[in-house]
Structure formats: C-alpha cells, structure tokens
Length: 161
Ligand code: ATP
Ligand code: MN
Image 1 (cartoon, rainbow, N blue to C red):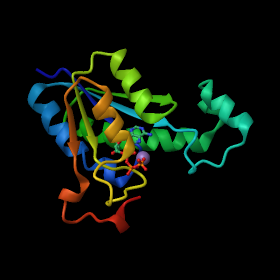
Image 2: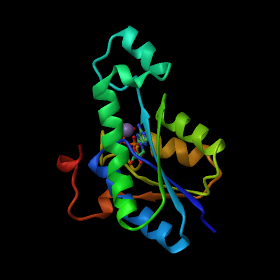
Image 3: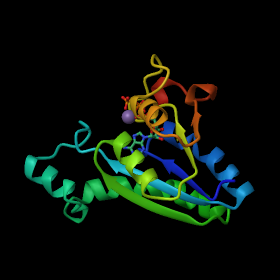
Image 4: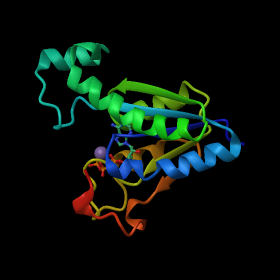
C-alpha cells in the first residue's frame, strides 16, 4: 500500500510530533521514509541580504552555513529516528515556498503518503491548521495524515518552537 512516505519538517518541535506515526506506518509497510525540509527564504527567521537570498534560491546552500545547518538538523532528527527503527531513509532539502515545494516534490517522486504536523514553527493553536498543512491538504490528491499537535496533552503553545 505505502512504499514511499513523505515526512515534511520545518525542524520545529511541533513537526516532530508526526514522526512517531510516520515511523510506525513505515515499519508496518516496510516503506522508505523521505524527509523533506524546505528552506523558506521569505521566512523572517533568516536575516539574509538580497544577494544571499538569490544564492540560496539558486541552490547554493553551502555558502550559508546557518541555513544548511538548520536544514540538516531538521532532516537528521527524522532520519536518525527512522534509521533506529531499521528503515531506509532519504533526506531532501529544497528551496522555496514550503507548500509549493512539497507539492512539487510529491509530483516528481513516487510518494504515496504524506505524514505531517498540524502546526509548525509558528505553532498558533488558534488556527485549526497551519497554512502549509492546509495548502498541502488542498493541493494534493495523495492521502495526507495530519498529526494534530494539540492532541498531545504535553504540548502547548508555549512549548512550540
Ligand atoms: P504558519 O506557517 O501558517 O504560520 P505553522 O508554522 O504553525 O503556521 P505550518 O507551517 O502549516 O504551521 O506547519 C505544519 C506542518 O507543515 C509542519 O509540522 C511540517 O510538517 C510542515 N512544514 C511547515 N513548514 C515546512 C518547511 N519549511 N519544510 C518542510 N515542511 C514544513
Ligand atoms: Mn509554518
């Protein structure tokens, strides 16, 4: 049923809540786990000049160690957890608007299930779904498992990164 499962992550604690479910399903189906981090150059968390933004857009992450490190940290958290369970994992980094990049990735690959968090870095519990989660749901025909971070009693807004 599922051979390739996509776990998009922005590296936040909230996104990590989806990981256990993704790993459990992947183990049951012996699926490959694909971890995708999208470098969102428009996000305010990066203080980058226009020249740097252009370099990143062209895919030159090697010039920007902080950006590369954030990406690697985000994907390796998921990759390490999946590897611990004996799963095959592939880490992917893309640049762009996250929902668009996720959809593009899915179109170009053999993904058959997406497992993601209801919220991410901004983690606003007022909204039912974060904008990336909502756009992915709307724009893909694949099954999407949205793990609601507020379903976990030990997570609250203050904890969200
Ligand atoms: P918003 O971004 O709308 O302010 P939010 O950050 O709380 O709200 P989303 O960004 O929609 O919520 O995050 C929901 C899920 O989308 C995350 O748990 C993660 O799985 C995925 N996601 C969000 N941003 C990225 C990204 N840059 N790269 C990969 N996956 C992402
Ligand atoms: Mn977000």
